[in-house]
Image (cartoon, rainbow, N blue to C red):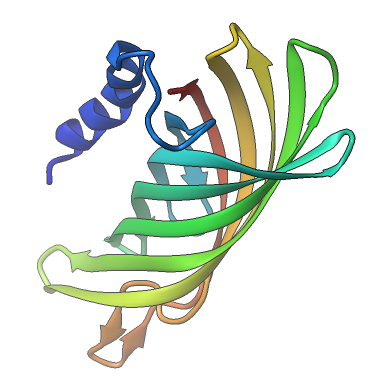
Length: 194
């Protein structure tokens, strides 16, 4: 899938949610949304993500727990030693989200998740060789963020995340192995309650 197509999907996800009928979805409190941002470590680049969030329970009067399912895509590059390493990363991460409302308009949250990352890596040294490989990796997610509740259905926000990705990061052949990465993400986006 081309980068422009993925960017269009990420940006249109909130618009589709807004156009959805207001009548129930069968899942009380279900929220859907899209995010765009920047991901960096040894490799860096564009990050896109779609989330679905379902309320679970109140852990305390001011702490609410929900389940979040995330599907993300990142296009990351690293220029080094006359060559380029490019990684296309697809992430599927279920997580627990803990939200604390500060007032009716603002809330803060923390995410903890465990999922999978499919990493397709390409090493290209012009004039010498180009090679592609892929790996399926275990990953974790640790995130914090804040929401501004624009209405009873729409919230916009920003989040910072650490995504440790374990194993060979998309490339492990020809005697070359890309090591585990812990990427740092900054994302902005919107959620819509159906």
